[in-house]
Length: 354
Ligand SMILES: C[S@@+](CC[C@H](N)C(=O)[O-])C[C@H]1O[C@@H](n2cnc3c(N)ncnc32)[C@H](O)[C@@H]1O
Image 1 (spheres, helix red, strand yellow):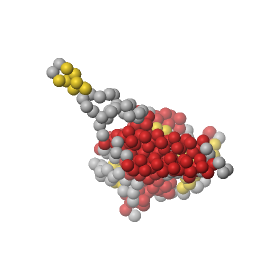
Image 2 (image 1 turned 30 degrees about the vertical axis):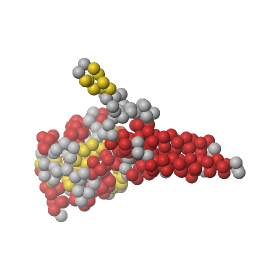
Image 3 (image 1 turned 90 degrees about the vertical axis):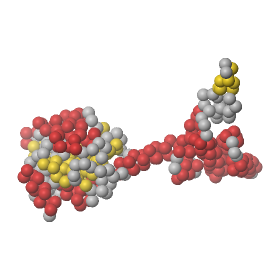
Image 4 (image 1 turned 180 degrees about the vertical axis):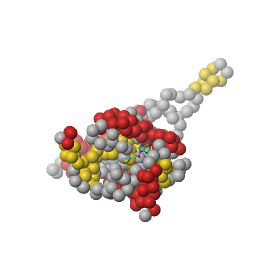
């Protein structure tokens, strides 16, 4: 144990020296020397099984030095690929230019890591310096946050928020590209309506912001065809179980008493908000006052709250009795809804007015 103390002292002294040199460094070559010193000290500290503190100290100086190099590379001209040459008459003269990265002993990997560090926000870079995250974990978190922020950025929609009477396939083109955070919808479940799922997914792929979600109720019977049609346009993410609280439905011909319904979840690209963990079982009350096929408002509210930011836009291509619109109203989101049936629209309008 006593033999470890001088080793620790020697390592700390070397790291202190590297830190001082970094503070004074003006050129890339000096910074590169610090990177090499700190990296060697880190390896040494690990081999000698020194304290976590000593290893962490060397690591943090190495990360600081790499970051400085990354900043210098970003600010200065690129040297990779050799020096340019200058023509004087017919004679080609070498231009007096700074040394290339290769001449400085900075290989492509070091240069790439340095620039990645310089591009990280301060908090993520500190997490890397403290060994709480690797550079690739930090970069992944940054890009996920970027996607989530892009998704939440408000955009104007041309089609007014509210209920639109008619077939969504004829009207939804008025919604601009990449302007909607969530499509929450409930098409009819019969075999003839399977094609509507694909048409809805196609439109959703256009209007959703990258990372936006489409959730559609579906019956179990034609689920394979529904998934196949929607998968042509969006990325399948998950199937949610909506559990019937109002009693199970007897399907005599199939010999099944059905106690749940699928909500298929698709995403445009990939979810940027995976830190937001969602439940895949929802329970809602039986509500049939506005439409014979009415769904639970609590179910809609849950996914709207989680997958659309406040003030953001939700689209329902099959509005029925207006459950999605009512859920948007209750949660402070904007809803654009389509419905072909005039009496359903009347009920939905009354419901919203109430
Ligand atoms: C299952 S219901 C929706 C019920 C709704 N989720 C609710 O809670 O009241 C489906 C609705 O889609 C409407 N519909 C069917 N085809 C449509 C289309 N191409 N465009 C717009 N609405 C359509 C039907 O008239 C019906 O009211």
